[in-house]
Image (cartoon, rainbow, N blue to C red; front, side, top):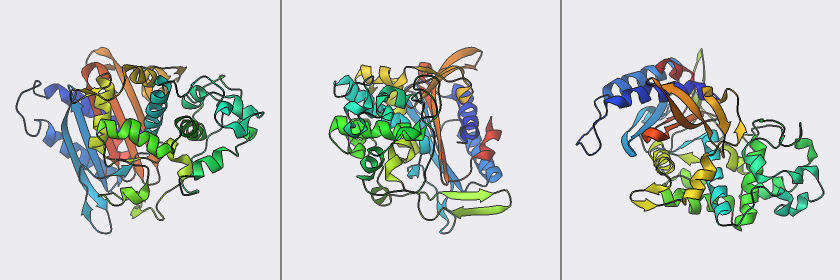
Length: 366
């Protein structure tokens, strides 16, 4: 998923955060902003990605957000910080937050067989796995990422009600194995338990409470706001816009969210502040605990030590500034886009990086 590409942005910027003013001190652009701008622009030139947006959170505050390069190579529209991009598997933490919210209110039992909710799966082996196993990639299901598929919000149920035991490649609970279909099924279980469409549940329980008014799963909504087009490029070919626009409603829960770097930054602020944001509680503490607890060992996950998979997050530790730091992170990739969210909860610090093309050149920022 090219997440290693964007990790360089996160670590490079994290080191620069030591130069930030103390909380409450007046500031415009941070002192390190020109260095950051130079590094990101150089990375875009190397990677052949048209543009990027970067948001930096420190001490629980959004301290910097900027767009770089182009949102569209044909119109030459500049990238701005608040533009929407598809964020790929960063979506999974939002699916996890929605399910954690339902679980806290007793509307879903994460440990129950999913056939309790998807009754068409009763009597099938595929119906014996739990939503917890689905969200932690431990259900023993195969992986696929289908960029183009059915459209319309009924597609999620149409596909998931008909799945069969061929999804298994090993027994549930035996090992961690990344699976996009498992997250899509978890989203459908949430839809049934919450008695609303998946996108509505995520909007009502996660996006709107956090203050993410532009973030959406719905292309026809996203495209009414400033949106950066996804691009593909090769070593010897210029960036070209991905056409047709990628869409598969049946896999929304696994990787199809539209969001912006500043709006994703607000989500990290709420997570790192135990569910509080702007002086108000937006998530019960139990939701944060469920979302950020590491459940399944994830060896080598995102380059972290002692990495575990939570609900749409990799949690672990990394050596930084001479000490071991806790990290919550996840990356994503979908046709023409790359994304990365990297949090240091003990420092209330996060870096969000979104790219509308290849992310390979960004590794040099490390």
